[in-house]
Length: 406
Image (tube, rainbow, N blue to C red):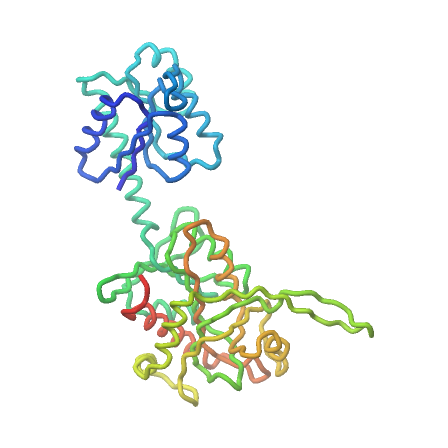
């Protein structure tokens, strides 16, 4: 749908514009502002695709029209950082002398001018053409990156993104102009609702890469949800290999201060900011975790070997750090930050934090990762593919559940 704002205090002229635009074969939402003040307020509150401006406009309600008021409004609009600037802007005026005297100034500002003469076709063809062009441009952009419900991020291609792309979402790969990231677009079918999904990999481990990708995907696609999937290291006494960890909360375990004790020894004072998961979704994750049908569905989809122990889904603390952990004592200081710690990885908090700082409407951020090792001296890559699979499989169970909020 195209949004059109007409800034004009001549109601008969506005009615004729509306009549012409309404005859187009696509939906146009038309609004009117009669003063410069009202138009600026409307452009501060929402975005419009096409802006039609009269040259003879009053500044405010009750004020007389000002010759060149429309041009003044245009110049103010360019200076007002809080206002959106429509892609297509047209000056359409019935004041022939005014149009002639200001034609050079209007052309120099890079916008179009058309003479409004009732009963003649020229202005009608011009307005219909410009609105149709805006509709075609919007449709092209929508085909590339609009109406996305869920953005999925992984840190690695194989095995994490590979596991996501094995989900039955009819994936199609695309690249956007000027963007080096490869995106994969799919559709998740569920009863009464389909989710449009985009997935991408940061291709590098660590919080900086995932935070940058998360912000870029949110700005490009404006998803309702952004989800980090993949693998993590588990706390050995509390998790089995392959276990799914739904992060609640997540935090940066390296956030704090290095200081010295009185004896000169170095001590780390942790000062993490914890990011909780959405309470409604985390509650649903806990309910699904308790259902045998959830575990059976995930286990039944994996045809290769599995590690010892029963697969579980757990909701609890997951910490993010900057380094790969592969020593037997690595988890001890992190566990001290949260005695119920379930897992450690390198990216989840970055995605959660990125969502916190997005412009409104911000997406709901979730992190779902599965245990592939215990961050100890016996660390290996043997169960990474399995863990990547269980992470993606639980994501599918969660988002296709009838109680998942849409």
